[in-house]
Image 1 (cartoon, helix red, strand yellow):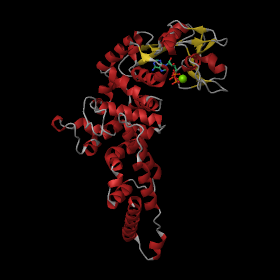
Image 2: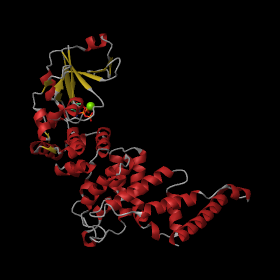
Image 3: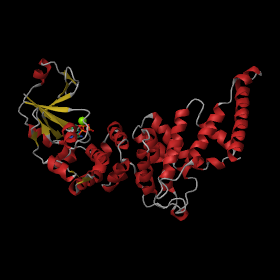
Length: 409
Ligand code: ATP
Ligand code: MG
């Protein structure tokens, strides 16, 4: 048997990037030989094994054929006769289809090195179209390597467009899609992921609510970039520049969905878009079964981002209501993420990226003031149950009034 390094490990070494996980392909072996050498099988009928010591993935060379719709509809054939070239041709991109032996000799039948050099993401063969997940993967690699100058080959973008139009994308499971989306959002340039999906028509299929934002104008006085779609891309870009966590990036992507519902005669104003957007945010959340913390933050940011922008003008009672709605006493982290997303929203405006955002510290201070109200003295006065809750609210309101007076003095 022969063993080769493949995929990301080879690609990233050639790019001079750090290599984290290594994928291996094994040619000329049977499953029984692998088991005899102590490798542990990953699944009952999948030809992938884990190394007994390193735990790295070793896959038997295989060919794949599509046998039906969706991902379940895949049959593969692994046997000692399958050659390295046959295994490499089933892979998504030429830059991911280079194999390396233990002397660093490269096998590169589909010219991945040439495309690395030329900074091109190009599909290996027409079989690319057999798995619609590859549309998302290519967009994710585009986001990851955009800063190195990589772009998607026109013929690959064309294939991605055909896949998007064929309805195959809908066959993807929420789990597979979310895995790609969440990884893509955590790349350096997540806005490129959305842009590439839009360029090939996949965004319209996967997230029509986001696609609808392009071409929708906003008032130039607040939004010099005007277009709501471009604004959303900039907010996402800012979220990566400021190293925000996934929850915040997801909320950034969805915060303005309501603007896509505004009747044209009301443009460029978007009255109550915070409210109208909620059902769209909920729909996208559920479509991809986003984790609970992502879902929750997206809804809260959608509902309250304008509150944050207007924080300095809010009455003490409105501030209190906001803090109560966030349950800021038990969930301080979530409130911090809300502030982060709103700051990215403010910075994701053309020419205003560097403008200070005093609302952030102002709201942090308000949260502190409300949290510092102690329960003990109220207990000592004999308050219990709902009355205790009411008394606590009164004290917090007092504290917020004092905070507001001090801040404006
Ligand atoms: P990463 O750095 O994200 O791990 P990677 O290229 O190693 O990048 P993996 O998901 O680990 O990506 O997959 C390893 C290799 O398997 C890929 O480089 C590619 O050759 C192949 N591959 C993985 N998923 C697919 C797919 N859906 N279709 C085609 N080939 C795939
Ligand atoms: Mg990998």
